[in-house]
Image 1 (cartoon, helix red, strand yellow):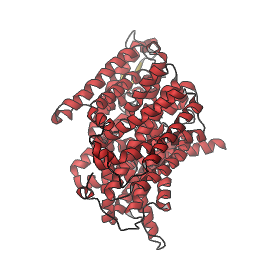
Image 2: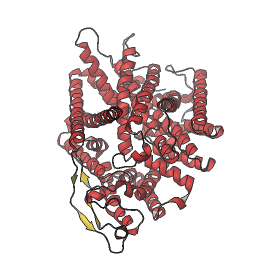
Image 3: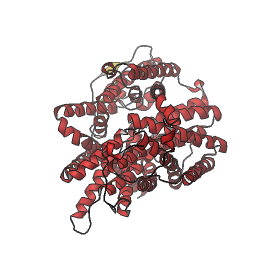
Length: 606
């Protein structure tokens, strides 16, 4: 058993407010809004952002301002934790399939789900993750004391703002200020058609090459996507991911869009776009580049995942039988009720897979059973490394169902949706539970908050998804919505469904080289000494650059350099405020982008 005193866990007077209606309600409202941010960002770059600290600051600030009326009191630290837990659960709804397998299924089969069906499906995926997290909390947090870095950072932030309340309001002001700045730039770009600054460069077609055969005389930097965009979202992303990822994405973009795409065009492996020096050829380039890019991302993620074998073995076989069987004074549910909950969520998931997607019952059941194991693995890996291997989880399941249900894209995508989505939800929740543990919160109220947060995220997130991309077939994998996660899931499903003969010319060679590069980079990252490891490019980041526009890569790269420079010049300020400022840029553009999409829908109805 762990000793709370050894972790400096604070105690609270009896009766300290924790699970209150206002805390849960605030978290649901904030989480519903923040879920739109993650869906917007996910469809742009395929990532989701942790919204825990953002939600904590917003909830704290709202109730501190209301406190000034003299009619209400501010949040206690435990209420802020409940608000943050519910909001974080809601914001992570994007991992339940909305930015990957769900639109991929629509693009392959044409099947779409109504808002109500989407809400039920995504909420059911979250429920599996919530219930599995109930069973894992004791072992991973109290017995093994895994660090869960994001959860620990959130706990430190909460303890800090409650010891220095004035600084919390300064952080909130900076969050709001940068959000307003980003929203203003996004709206200005939309209203005035603000143009990207295109980098100089023009190259003639090679005589006898594919471009000349297609009647195109050459290509420009604008055709390849090399320009600087005015909007701020990707700069904020760059600040958060840091220079190693930013530089890796820039290298990958140069490799893909400045070298491989011209080579593929001249070889006739893909067709050029419109013969205009100002028109991006993103869609045409993606038709070929996604294959080596996806291969690099998949093999790199799986190889890194394999290096976590100790965590996998420990997850399956706890280190101490005595510890695993020890009585848990913070048990969320009695064991028999926990097992009943597992059976219920499994039955719900199987029934929905059968009714929504006509997946064979035993295949669906096997997928859910596999989810329990992989969620356990994902939670431990995330607890040790702060990286949740969602891509690896999904690809493992896609590979399994390519064998068990060949030629069935629904089984391949949606069973993997349950596995990857529930594993991600479980791992994300473990970070929130770590936060609660470190500030002395009781876990059962947190699980109740997570349940209501997931419901709010499903309600708001599914509506936002349908507003943003009502026509995934024509909107996604485009210059505006690159949707790299959709491209990866779709490509893997199609490869397993149609076989290699359906690949474009030269793609098989691209897959082989991209896959080998991903393996080599992952092995080097795990085996080289630390002083050399920092010079190894990130395999997933290199691969990601193949499936996003070059101007996105440039913005992320510049943002990462700016963040590193500020951190070097003003380390004290950056430690407290840099992440807050970047989060404001991301939230501001995301929410204004969603608002503009809603405005267009309303205008179209008139």
